[in-house]
Length: 174
Image (cartoon, rainbow, N blue to C red; front, side, top):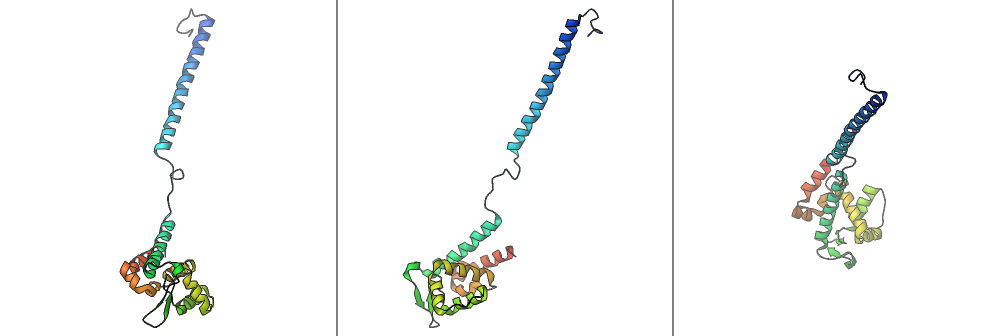
C-alpha cells in the first residue's frame, strides 16, 4: 500500500492488509463451500451402488421361480384337495398315488435313495408323500437335480408348459 499511497500511515496499511486477508479468506471459503455443495448434490443425484436400494438378487428370483413351478405341480395334482385330506388315488398302473404331489411309494423310495443316499421303508415313503413340506422338497430336488425329473408329472408339465421353464432355469443356473 505504501507503493500506491506513499503518505499512508501504518494503521491504514494494517487495516488494508487485514481487509485483504479476510476478503481472500471469504472467497476461498465460498469456493470450498461451492465445491462441497456440488459433491453433496452429486451424491444424491448419482448415488454409489452401495447406497442404491437393493432388491431381490437374481439368485433369489430364480429360487422363487423354482418354487412357483413346484407349487404349480402341487396345486394341479391335488385337484382342490388339501394336505389334511390324505389324498390317495389309484392310478392306471393299479398303484396308489399319495398326497398333494401324487407320489407312489416306489417313486419316493427310489428318489430318497438316489438323491439323499437314504434307504426308507414303504411306511416312511407314504408319510413323506402325505407331508406337503417333505414332498415339496423332494419334488423340488427331483425336478431340478434330475435331468428329466419333470416327467414324473408329465400331464401337469404339459398342461402348464413347465418343461420349457424348467429347461430355462437349469440353463441359467449351470
